Length: 307
Image (cartoon, rainbow, N blue to C red):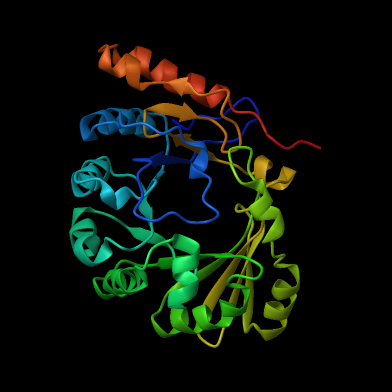
């Protein structure tokens, strides 16, 4: 069974925000549209939701936050997720907790990692994150690679007048440690509280993409990821992630989201069509009722950007 929304887009992946807590305070963070809450889903509640996701044909699970490694039960959550035999289980993290958790997470069934890491320069890192934790993040990244989590992807948000001159340093670091570098163009979001920041520090990656194309030994295009280009240069790999405010992104979107307080979020850029699934779970509704609620979240999906 593989469910499609009303626009014939298959739902392949589910991104679960496990918490809105974080040990960093990044300049560009828009909290993925999350509402501050202390009422996080339990691991058993998450497992119930994942069982429905598996039943309707979702293949990939991404665990995110906030910072998901702040959950004391993160290893248990990964174990329960892995028990359902999804095709892929990944975590997006800032890397600070990986020195402790990399091996337990791998042993629990985690397939791969995306690590938000915007600078190798201590001053720049502290400016971006408001914390002096560069050493801890770097140690965590190297530990993840050491225990064999692969691929480990570095997500670097590129910001004008902040870290745009550090791209090649990050590429050399990634190449030396067998990491994949994803360069992410700063975007605006309806849920962002500080749009002025994104306007002031937006840095177009268009010219860099042309330069990389000339430098690359090989270029691949990811057709089902908004035609993202991957550049293979001297044994290293760089992927460019452009803003998502376009029809191509919406046309190819196959992802559903879940907020920390247990609401299905059909669209990253909208907060007015969420579907509450945690309350029915706590009211012990039947599996059939819960599945219908989950499907309602899917049928609420509509492209944010249209021609």
